[in-house]
Length: 145
Image (cartoon, rainbow, N blue to C red; front, side, top):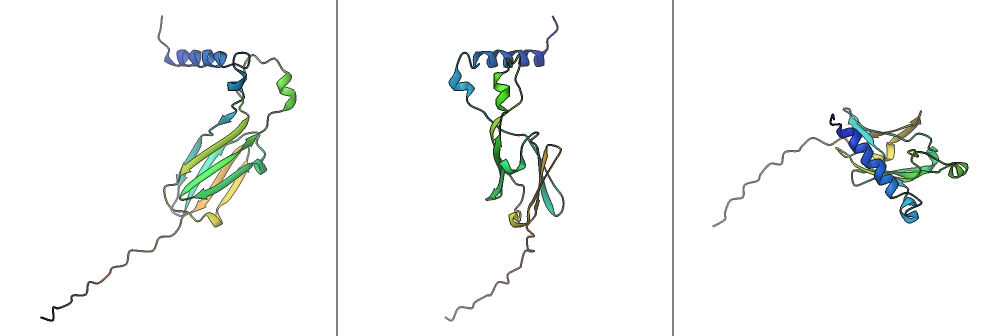
């Protein structure tokens, strides 16, 4: 039999989902949080963070910057009628999400922009221009003795 680590990994995931199913443990099935994946890159003048949030209403997303960390959080509501369906597999995520991203440099959060298009949230954060290092002259004091 040929080894297939990915098949085994997916099989294990399926077994874990079955073990923690709503029939078995309703308390665990109520945990509906997830961490969205992000892409972070920078140009000379800005840091850009992109994350896929398909089907989300942009007004349900909060974005903030605290201590050079970008925080993205919000909620994706499930459709009420879908709860009545008898799913064979349910992988689409609903519920709360939270992501904190350490930024590679200081940014100007007051002028940051966020755009949402085709399920992709793109946050553009202008970099803070750091002043050039200033040389400080050393004054030599002579002893008065």
